Image (cartoon, rainbow, N blue to C red):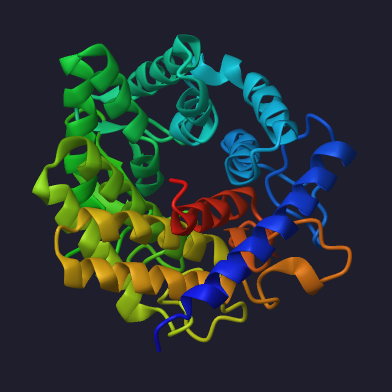
Length: 369
């Protein structure tokens, strides 16, 4: 059944209002704190982080709130939280600089066209490119030299951007080769994805698919597939290489064919009878990526299908079963997210990237993006 547009607009407005209340409480109660996931619905805790990749998502939400409201309070806070991570533009220890700087400093540049903001984004992209392994032709993950993560598809766009801004063909080569390697070894014929690929660092030979977060090495972890769906679409927007659009659409087809009608997948589609049936952050990422694909597809029928499916996801996520509006004491926005089920981190909680991509998807529906 088609989504009622007027009803959806009202739900989106209410969701933004609620997000503003939750974000305001977070930054006023815990100033300069960068949470990753809640425990029992509470942001402030001493839980393990595993890796340092989420600091851009809070500032990104603040920029989205400014875009939605025009309120200078949100802009001031967005600038403040962006400045707090500027030093990370030279961080060579993580593969997540796209997450950190595209959501913050790139949004700052879109508002002001200030050359300094743009240069911060470019420098982050240049730094990320230093992770490229010539033997194997991939950007290494934070785990080890031999490790390639599907997650990096959501970060490689910042290297394409740096190449575009500087005319640096070497940056373009590295980014393109990484995407082709990921496409070949981590995306399967049915459009499903592996979380990680392992390479022989001496020869560059691909050895095997593995996972840190999925059910099995040969299954498909939902958030990883959403990263691929969104990421390959972004790469196509930079390159117009039809191979990358085809890959994004294959991932989209797998998502839509294997997820229940409400649009929210489990942590891994292969897990039998999962005790926790929802991974809302994967759904939020997929919704935002599908809204991009709807414009990139070049075919009205497919584009409408992606757009309508994204709206179905958002219709589900804006209900009280997922939106924490009727859950007293819950500090996050979106419930039933999953960080790392195997490690027991952020399981069935609010997670910062889920919040960010949820608001981003809502912004795209409203035409802000």
